[in-house]
Image 1 (tube, rainbow over the protein chains, first blue to last red):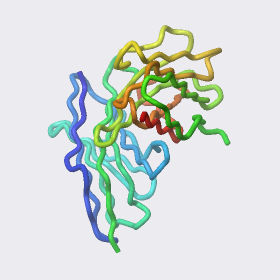
Image 2 (image 1 turned 90 degrees about the horizontal axis):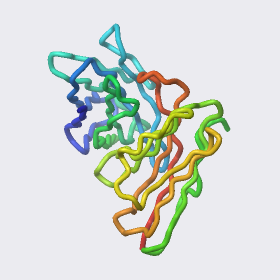
Image 3 (image 1 turned 180 degrees about the vertical axis):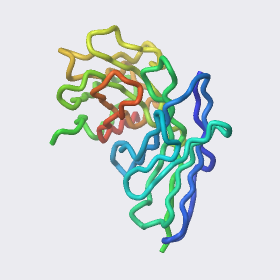
Image 4 (image 1 turned 30 degrees about the horizontal axis):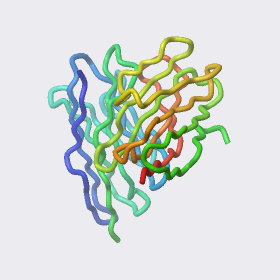
Length: 113
Length: 115
């Protein structure tokens, strides 16, 4: 079985500060990992994904994430937060043999001026 | 637009009534998913269609929930005898590839409120 844990339902940062959103997963086989972002009253939009190869993955809007197998983690970072980054972020995992994604419960990112 | 389209965007219904939620996937996408998003609960998988294969219904919470996909395109999620706990945002997504690394393209969802 696969599962995803996102630490912190809410994260608050100041504009210009580092953004760090945490994601840990459990999987019996090498996982495929995803980060999605959801703006108010919209569906989810893919930020980035890890499948194989380089463990540091760059996505849209300056976000990146690093797959660390030893820590079973896939944390999302951005060096400098912008007001427009305020949204809910979801980590997801796709396990071998599964055609569907399992999502974490989401982390709401709040950015203050 | 070429995105996933869901209708209605909002639906208010009385407890015990049936509702139908519609999803138009991106043209040519063979995979279609329904998820339910409840406050603080993240996204809960409901059902998955892939081409002409039998759907994966393992996420449907009860026999009051059903879904069909006609002609490999449009899908309808039906909830019979709605209950207050069915209140949530129902999200549809489609994907154009069988591979598990394929990203899902989501619609804006239908917000269902059961009174």
